[in-house]
Length: 258
Image (cartoon, rainbow, N blue to C red; front, side, top):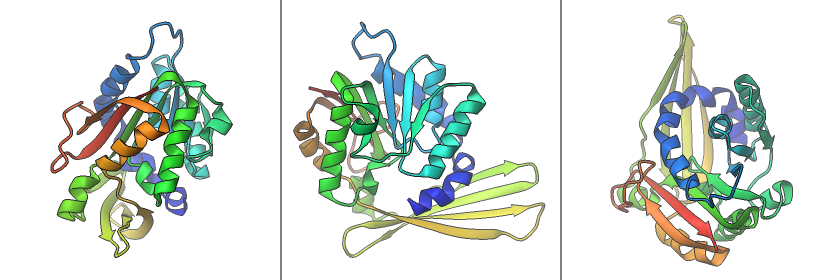
């Protein structure tokens, strides 16, 4: 988690949350609306919550939300974001595989895992454990929503570069450049170059990196039923468009616990 501890201070500058939440929340809430109507307050766990912005936004909409992330510094930021929004959201520094121990078995109506988080699990065993942990957190019939990059396409094209992001605060400016290194063992090194300057001064630069295991649609199709999920649907993004392995930007998966 060194990369995300280091990047936590800039993460909310890197993401345009106003734009992202306006785009993603309608799809997320459409998925949550499929839960049983006898639920008075929908319980949602945002796994790999980062700085907690999805969790806080859902809390403002009346959901009972908790968030988890392995990065302690991200969780510190998430707690500050909840306080700033005036919302009571429980955030805990805990990773995949231990969620049900901390938040309780069959305690959640929905589990979200967004923002390309699952590919940080570097073995198939870790992925299996995470999916089973998600299932253990959910009540029967609960919803699971995953959002990852479409690594089927990434591995076909070997496209290294992603769109740069920028942010300004007064006289200060940040630039964020993301790129992949494809490693001989099949893993990917994910790199973020952060550049900062103020008032026309010299740019300061730092690079943070993390390993990813490219997660393919076929793997999830095989493992989700084993973990206890059915009614699995695949989308190409948070508009709910069909998933196309050779061109979709994302792989979004919705499933129901059996």
